[in-house]
Image (cartoon, rainbow, N blue to C red; front, side, top):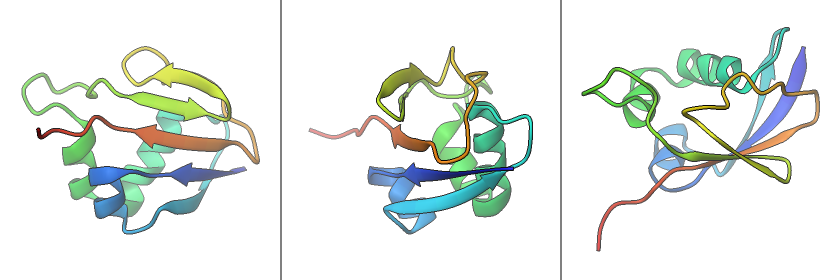
Length: 95
């Protein structure tokens, strides 16, 4: 198992209810499997924020894995390790 810290912002923070949460992910660990774990823990409200209802695919947003920027639409198979820190950087609408 891997324990990772997940930092949240804007609407994702509102759904999760915390700035930072620690999550345990079973092997094999990838960013995509971390999101599956988060969906199970935080339910439909989180999935509705991250998945595009029109396409049925994950919405485009940035993820910071330690110091590396990766993308939700291409990099969900990126491995994660115990102690990693992940930030979900979701676009904010408005003007």
